[in-house]
Amino acid sequence: MLSTISKPVNLKVKKNLTEIHQRKQEIKDKIINFKKITPPVNQFTFARLKYRSGDWDTDQRMPSNLLNSLIEYTTLPVNLQEKVIDLESNDIFQYPFCYISGHKLVQFSTQESAHFHQYVQNGGFVFADDCNHDIDGLFARSFEAQMHALFGPSALEKIPNNHQIYHSFFKFEKGPPNTAFELNGWGDDIVHNYLKAIEINNKIGVLYSNKDYGCEWDYDFRNKRFYRIDNTRFSINIVMYALTS
Image (cartoon, rainbow, N blue to C red; front, side):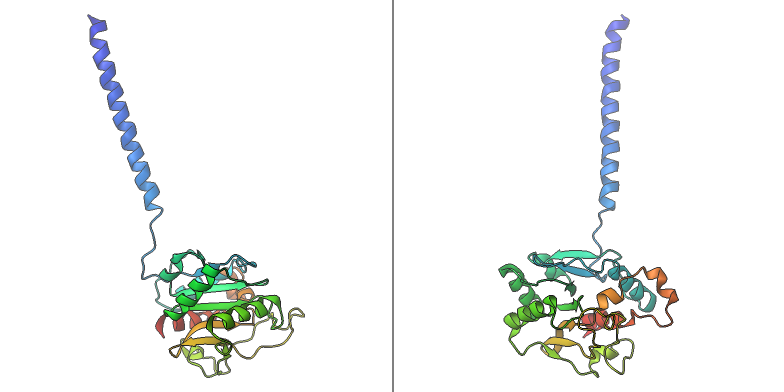
């Protein structure tokens, strides 16, 4: 008699254990999904452009330093994670601000060129920084050649030192602040007292620097307290100009 009862009991227990396991897996899946929440669209995201040629992944501590400054000085909602965007991907059109830098050759593919041009023409903002701080260096010469090919030979021009970008948040009466890297004996070893830009409909679409701001701001944000004047302040101007102009 006992043997005839035990069989259905075992089947019931097995069924219950299976249901419990399935429920535990459902809870686990929900937890994993919570960790993958996409940041809200109203958050600022530091988007870095990845391109096929050259070394696009420079100054890796700089984004967190810039984001820390945005939190300190503004009320702008900030996504704490840098986003790397493949220039060939349509994802670029989801972000109003993008950063591009490097030391080496910039030679866009056909798709990269098309996306870069369309992004800027549609109102996007690209901050381009020459890590060599060298107007005759490979990055400078090749990046400028790409801009000439995409926007015309006279599109990339020096902007005046009273431009709106120097007053968009902090006041920089003398134009772009200098960096410690400009006179470090490397690159062209001169102070570049200007920035260049491509303007679309009277608004900067590409801001171009030979001052090596990326390296200037490439340090742990917790060390900022040792600076007499916060050298990341101009990064706030760049972002606020890009988002509000």
